[in-house]
Length: 355
Ligand SMILES: Cc1cc2nc3c(=O)[nH]c(=O)nc-3n(C[C@H](O)[C@H](O)[C@H](O)COP(=O)(O)OP(=O)(O)OC[C@H]3O[C@@H](n4cnc5c(N)ncnc54)[C@H](O)[C@@H]3O)c2cc1C
Image (tube, rainbow, N blue to C red; front, side, top):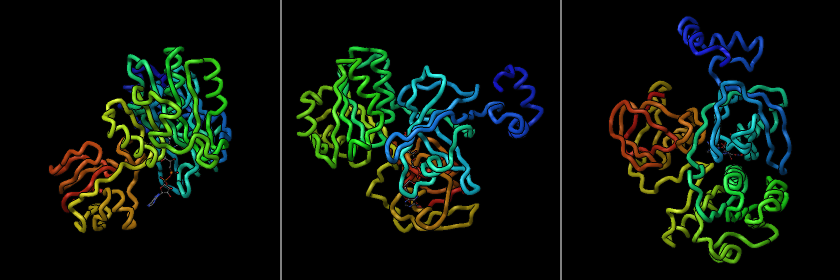
């Protein structure tokens, strides 16, 4: 419905509520919306035993993105909206968008997408975001480290980097359990054939091929790894081990990381056993030395959340009072009535939230 020109859009917007218009349009064509981005599923394919690839045709409200960025998906499950981020694996210039989703044990949205989404369905998208992207000027040498489903933004970045600089000296190290768990395996080999400057190596835990990550293991494959601008996305264990080695070698500045899971929590929370009050739901629970979101969940509350790493802002709410630390920036917020993201906020005093 961005076909409506901006002036008509503004006039209509002031006269009638956008939600109501979208509701009416949805009876004619669910792809017609005033400004919301929705997308129709055009293909679903099994990539590995637990990863599916989903291709979508977005409506006219879709704006582009940069390779390595993610978009949030909103789905209705059991009467509640859930929002999760997925890295885009299609190229920014494609007219369709694609994601690859790994089924997580007991995960709500990943299992729902695997089990319920069909070709022809229309789904709502939220914001595009993330700074896990290439710099304007490519480095001379790159190392891309992927683990499990963390290959998604790595693959996207690799494709874009080679598009910009076909002879770029880029090395890929991809950690997976077995060769059956390697996503984008065919595409990666095709890229390596097309670009002789691309070095491709797999480390398969169960078969022992090249072994598990250690500085020695990596150096055996890429002796010059410490000279390369490195991008990594994978399980927390792998990312933690890599960032520790990079820190020990004083090269953290050339390591760029994308985390799919919750932020690491600081271990020096001082407000253990301090109350967290959810004012509107009239619930009070004790801080259990974790993020406010996790303390609330541990006590049986179910605040809405999305990425769990402070990026999508789905869990953003008003802190009425109390002191919290932002686990991503380290900033301490002791002001009343401020917006906080509870997935990455650690209470430092009793806290009251407008939830
Ligand atoms: C920037 C970004 C990009 C991403 N890109 C991708 C991608 O390309 N592909 C991909 O597959 N994923 C990606 N993810 C991860 C994705 O957003 C979801 O987190 C993932 O699909 C799991 O969501 P879920 O709803 O299935 O699991 P959730 O229901 O959120 O649960 C996740 C895990 O936590 C456990 N859990 C849930 N609630 C609790 C609780 N109260 N107590 C204890 N344990 C609990 C579950 O058992 C499960 O194992 C990305 C995440 C981010 C932040």
